[in-house]
Image 1: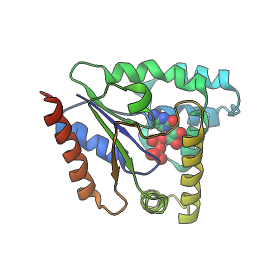
Image 2 (image 1 turned 90 degrees about the horizontal axis):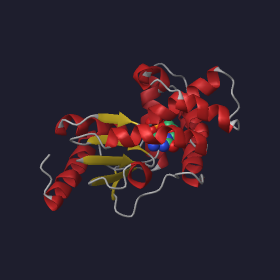
Image 3 (image 1 turned 90 degrees about the vertical axis):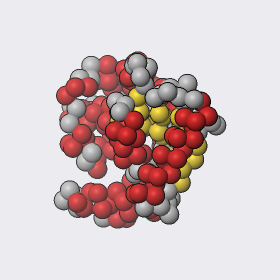
Image 4 (image 1 turned 180 degrees about the horizontal axis):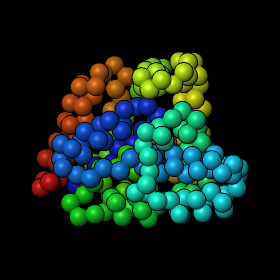
Length: 213
Ligand code: CDP
């Protein structure tokens, strides 16, 4: 069973994807980390965001086993990730890796922006997770504060709105709900309610498709 989870920044898709992976005993790929790694390398090497070929080379040479999720979750890296993610050469270089992960025997859980539309259009389960920008900013603000990051709520909200706009407006694999994805708006749900809602969606799909996994 392939489970595709897409959604905007801080919608809770990563938490749901991780939990679904554990629940069903499936491997999980947070595809945002790939774009974050390219963005982080571009910042470190001072590569301009319009140097598509150089960014594509970074993506092609990415050592996925060496990614450091903690360091990559820092605020400025999210903005850089969103910039490099709009570059077609970067997306092309990361495509095969993600498709191979999705198609491994037994299936997988992947979360990102284009999983249901580009990476695994054949996924049995597609969930589009979202929440209002204000709710997402509040969650991300708390997450950052918990790690000692000093970004204000207003800065976090502005970053989220900017990234939403760029991710949805780009020509290459924009953030969009696949027509056959189930919408999960968790603006008014707490973590456990959101988990129960996601689980219900997957279970309904499994009954529908008679999935053995
Ligand atoms: O956790 P958060 O939602 O803030 O970000 P993320 O999922 O780690 O993704 C960081 C950035 O990578 C996003 O703003 C997107 O621009 C990009 N991304 C993408 O374009 N396609 C994906 N499948 C995953 C992430």
